[in-house]
Amino acid sequence: MELEELKQMTHMHITGWVLALILFIVALVMYNQGKAKPGKILHMILRLDYLFILYTGGDLIAHYFGGSSLLPEAIVKGLAGIWVIAAMEMILVRNNKGKPTKSFWIQLIIALLITLILGFWRLPM
Image (cartoon, rainbow, N blue to C red):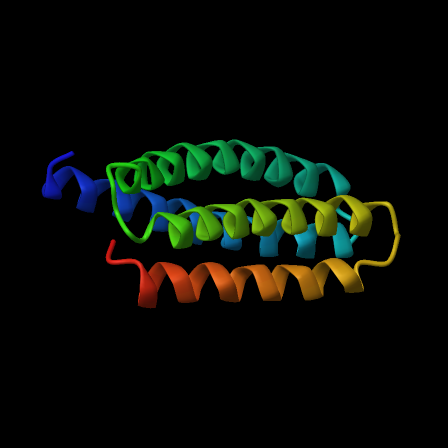
């Protein structure tokens, strides 16, 4: 993969997860305000964004399979990214059902920190 293509994929990936965080917060606010229908619509759009994030992230991680010494860290970052998506999904689903979400908030913070630290400070792309 050419460097310019890699940069474009990185920008698309970052745009995808920034959009996901915004949609997550807005959907959570909608659910908390009792606006289930708009919250559900945003939740479904967020799920489509998850697919985009997984595609772009998978494309980026594939670059490391070319013999890079950073492959283990890239795999950990990918798994932490999937953990972020799972925690966000569980928070929204459990919040909508009125169940406690504290443990998933803790997981979200931990996974998000791991992902951001590896993505911005350890891995070159």
